[in-house]
Amino acid sequence: MIQNQSDFIERETRQIKIRLQKTLGDIEGCRHHYLLEAIPGMMPVVEQVIQEFIAETKNSVEFAHALEELQHVNYDADELARLVGQYAAQPQMQIALKVAYETWKNAPGSQELLRQIVDHADSISSSGSETFTSSQAPT
Image 1 (cartoon, helix red, strand yellow):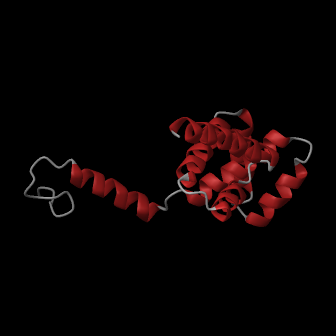
Image 2 (image 1 turned 90 degrees about the vertical axis):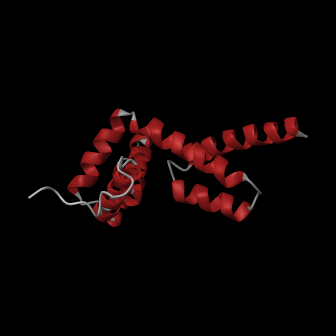
């Protein structure tokens, strides 16, 4: 039973990778497809493959170029569609654009990032009686 489950997960992992390549990095579409499939326990596998796909794409020259392109158009979704069309003959660039946009879209905002930093500082506070957020600098 465990071997069958392991084989199934391996096959599905390959299928997720293929789907991401064939759809030129359509991460949302991939997530949606597997949500509709409703296979128990698959979403963590899907997310892991997606994160690996994003990490792999971030290490490409195309990704750096895609970031520049998207910054020039202020990460506008309509402009993303135009850019993807503009690079129709370059699938790796289309993937990089979609991954760069997805990364930007899901990045925490400045308020969320600040909250995460403060929460982390609170968790490593050595005094225990006083938290980072309630302490004050000497005057």
